[in-house]
Image (cartoon, rainbow, N blue to C red; front, side, top):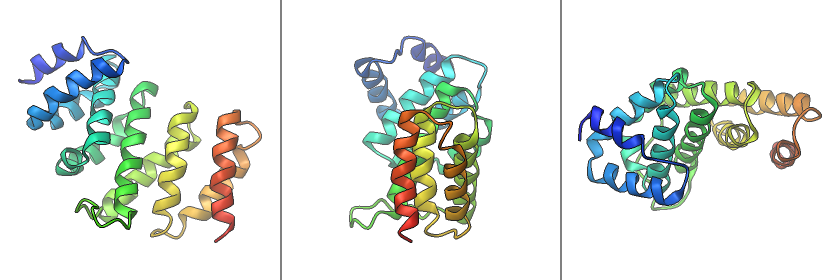
Length: 188
């Protein structure tokens, strides 16, 4: 499968798990398509970019290895993603990568996010947290920043300040997640 055929196949993907699952299986059988999928996600003006994001997120939830193998390509794409329906899956993938990085479980994938990767994810997560996005990317960003803040010390005070500033104007879901995050931050 090449880029044109992948693009055509993405036209038939919808938000249902079944539809995404079929496409994920095709991607898993053709892992060379991951960088092409990421390239499509970067094309923010194209509605297909969000479908590519859904598929990439589903791949990451099953197995992070294909993302880790293409980590630099994914990390470099973050600054190009601004379409709401593409930001949500990108923020979820960032959360999965960071959870994996900070996991103490022995089955943790060998990853070792570099300082460059952590800084790029941090920048994107703060943008999503303070930007005009729905609650899902904001919630994923809170978790991501909470974990990265274990290694990069300036993050926790900034995160705490932003959550307190935006608390009153946030939705009920935002407030609930912010309360949980602030509770963890205040214990430190």
